[in-house]
Image 1 (cartoon, rainbow, N blue to C red):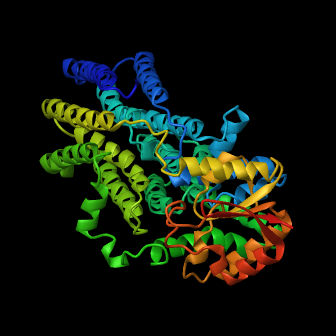
Image 2: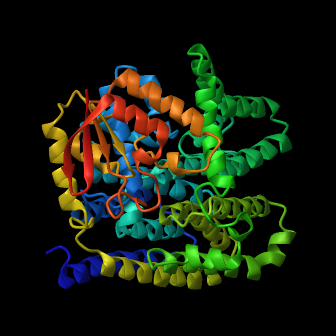
Image 3: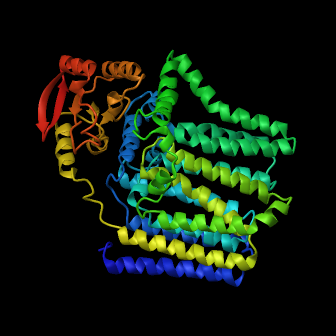
Length: 538
């Protein structure tokens, strides 16, 4: 019923009315600031509407393979007694991506897809709140509400692959919080060294949510340091720099105390370095990753965000081109913020393109930098021009909303292998207990989630054994160590075409000599489910 044409029309009509009201509210009083409590009340009501829409279309199914990785890590964290070791080693080198899900589990959230999506939405709404606070520093709150609403409306009807919980959700939240700290410092809204330390810790922690965050984190940290240097606030600069290195220093001390420092550097640095800067995982040549053809084909591929991206880009173009002369003559903060915002956006584009993989969820990095720069472009424009820019923003946002609503569909049957998932997970449950560990040889981490069994090996997926990587000896060592330490009850060979992600490309375990020999020595075949082999430890 909720996917019927008439329900979709009703949903669009409601969002249309809210958008037109906010537009009229701005056009009637373009330079007027709404009093503090009223603006936050309106913002809260807008957020509430977004939550209601998303709850109506909540999806308890895997719409992105990565979500299963993070949920598998939560199950492992709750299973193993060594919590810190598990957090750092069973989370695919992204403990901060998994941490919100773990926090949610303590609040009663279950490790499933719908409740993970709710946690992702909370992070996005928190980022939207920071966007509102940032914009309120340089423009009227009536326009802040409209700009923030454009992003919220996009989030309300977001494509299922964007809605699925992923590392970008927490990464964007951290980046937006750090961005808010930088802009507030430019406008002299804070002057405490403790805040400098906290922002530094946020920036230094970015790599533990996702390696691709590094370029954007460097831009924020560098410009904040420059701003501190302009005012000769060297104490602030020292605290900021201390904060940036503190997370890595503490984690290194932990690994050194265990005599496993190489485990940290192999899994947290070299693994990500080879992924991003070589052809180990992507066949796209390094020189072709930033070509205009790839930028247009990847970033504008599908209609899940194209209208919104084009609208924001056009607003940026109008604001910068038609106001560049007045901007150059200004001695205020705007020129510095514009330069920062342009470089921040370019660094996000770099992060999206660097690895050479066309994973759609990478594009989530673009929206906060685009909205921020578009807001600045509107703010530096004359009020008479701002009105037209506001109308353009509304047209583009509603066009994207209409497109997204049209594409909303029932995702319960998203996977062609859902029946096979049920049969395999049923077999896993019948041959193991909740206290047992399992290993899935394949890229189908959803089996951990559906069977509610903890990982017996620290990586939920094992496709990296198929790569031509100098890290294979260290991965093999880790695999054998975990197999002996955890003694997983079941070993599931699921690396087959169609069922496993890229199962036609990556190697089954019996084509990896060391793994084949270990499984043959310690495990016995006890079941086969449509080509998926289940082994039990002897």
